[in-house]
Length: 235
Length: 373
Image (cartoon, rainbow over all chains, first blue to last red; front, top):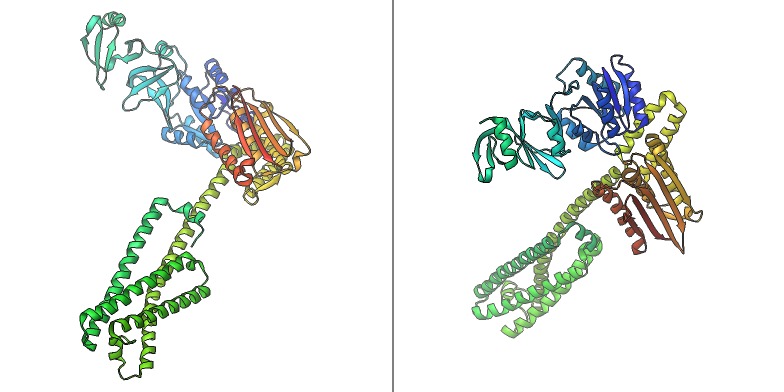
C-alpha cells in the first residue's frame, strides 16, 4: 500500500520512515513538509494511507482534510495537542502520539490490513460522496447525500446536516463544481439545495419559486435559476 | 487580627461586610438577653428577700446592668482595637485578667455608689440579706467577689466564643490559601513545561539515536538541563542574564532539532548586560513565544534576534522575530505567557520595569523589556 508522510519536522519524518520499515507491505512514496505540498502529492500519487501531523506551518492537518475531495486513509500523528486528541477521540479517527510507540503503530496498521471500512477511496472522476468537516473539537466525514442545504457564509460554506451545522473551508462555487449535478441544485447566489430533501414547491412572486425542505427551512429559487429548475425537474 | 492583605485575598468584601453585620447582631442580642436575665434575677430576689419596693430594686439593678453592658462593651472594644486575639496565649490571658479586674472594680464602685443613692447603704440589699450574718466589711468584700464573678462569667463566654471562632477562621483561611498557592504553583509549572516542545524534542531524540548517537546524547543533556532549570525556577526569583542565556541556548538547540534550517538565531549580548539579574524564565518566555507564534508557523522560518544592552542604568532586552501576517487565532494564548511575565516584572521591580510587545509592523514582532540595573 502506498503511503505518504506529512510532517514539517525532518527528524519526525525520518523517525516514522524507520518505524515503517518494519512493515514491508507499506511503500512510502513521498514526504511533504506542509499542507500545500501534501495536497499536491496526494493528488499526484494517490496514496492509500497518509500519516498526517496536526501542527504545521501554513495550516493544520485538519485544514488539509477539509481541502481534499477524496480523502485517503488518515493516521494523525501529534506530539501534544489536547484539542486535537479530543477531536480524534470523538471522531474515531486514528492517531498516534509522538514519540510513536512501535506497538501502537502496528495496531493502527493492523486495522487497515484487516480491511475495516475505509474512509478513503481510489481517485476517480465520479462526483463527491463525502467531505471532511470540522466544527470546534468535533470532526466528521459527512456523506453528502445527507446534507440538505449548503449555504455560503463569506468564503466558507455552512452545511445543514441533520442537527449539525459544520463549516467547510472552501467557497460555494468551488464546492458546486465537485457536487453531483443530479442531486444538488444551485437555488440562488447563496445556497445549494439537495433535491432529495424537497417536500414541495410553490410559485412565488416574479417567477421565483419557494421550496419547502423536509428538515425545515424554506429556500427561495431565484428567477434565473427557476427556469433551469423547471427544466431539470420537468414538472 | 490578621493582616488585611491575606484576608482580602480570600474574602469577598461584600461577604465580609455581611458577616460583620451578623456578628454584631448576635453580640448585641446575647449582651441584652444575658444582662436582662441577670437584672430580673437580682431585682426580683431583692424584692423578695430584702422586702424592698420594685421601683427601688429596678433602679439599682437597672443601673448596675447598664453599667455592666457599658463596661464589658468597653472591654470588647479595647480587645478588638489592640487585636488581643492575635497575641500568644500567655500575654492574652494576662490582658484578659487585667481587663476583667479593672471592669469588676469599676462595676463594684458603681454598685456601691448606686446602692448609696437608692438605699443609703453601700451594700445592695439583696447581698445584705444574703450575707446578713457577716460583718459589714466582709459584706463589702463579698460584694466585690460577686462583681468579679459576674464579669468573669461574661469574659469566659465572650472570649471562649471569639477565640474558637478565630481559630476556626484561621484554619479555614490557611486551607484556602494553601489551595490557592498550590493551584498557582501547578499552573506555573504546567505553563513552563511546554508539553508540545517536550514531546517533540523526545521524538527528535528518538530519531537521532540510531544514526547520530553523539548528537542524540547532546540533545538528552540539553533536555535534562532545560528541565532542571525549569523545575528550579520556582526556587529563586532572579538569575543573571548569563545564566538565563544558557537555558535559552539549550532550548534553542532543541528547537533547532525539529525546525532545522528554519530557525536561525542571532545573538547580540553586551558584556555589561550578562551580569545583570533578571526574573528567572523571563527571556526564556519571550524566546519561546517568538518560536511558537513567530518562527514555527512560518513555512520558511526566519531569524530570531536576541539583543541585550545596558543604557543609562537600564537593561534593555529585545527579542525580534518574523511572524505570520494573518496570525489572529494565536493572539489569546500568546497573551497568557507575556501577561504572567509582565506581572512578575511588576512585582519584582515595581513600575520602573516594563514589558512591551510591539506588533505594529505586519509580519514582525518585537518584545522589549526594560528594567533598572
